[in-house]
Length: 165
Picture (cartoon, helix red, strand yellow):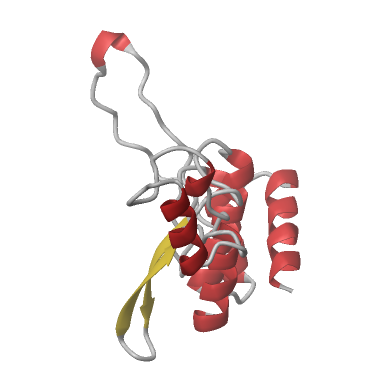
C-alpha cells in the first residue's frame, strides 16, 4: 500500500502543475551575485498546516500531497525521498543509503536511524574474518569486493514506516 501511495503521489506530481494553496507573496530582492550571475531561486510551495523542505519543489509538493491525504510527516518524507531519486538521481535514490532523525511525539523521544548498507547475506562476521585471514588482512580494505554493501534506502523506508507509521 505504501509503494502504491508513493507511485500515485509521484505520478500526480509529474502530471499536474504545482498550484500553491495561497497566493505567492512577493520575494525580497536578492543580493547581487559575483560575476553578475542571476540569483538561484526555486519556486515556493505553500501549505497552511504542514511543512516539507526538499531540494526540488515537485518533491516538496508530493510530500505535502501525501500529508494532505492523511499521511504522516514520515510518509511525506518517504514519498519526497522516492521522488528525489527520480528528479535528482545523482543525489539520492533507491540504490543508496538512508539516515534519518525522527521525533516520536507519543514517547517524546528523538530517534536516529542508520540505514547504511548491510553486508551481503552470505557474508557473516565469521565468514568475513575468515576471508580477511585468508588474504592476510587485518581490516576491510578500502577498495574491492569486500567493501560492497546492499543499499539500505528502501529497507530504511520500510523499517521507519513500520516503526513510526
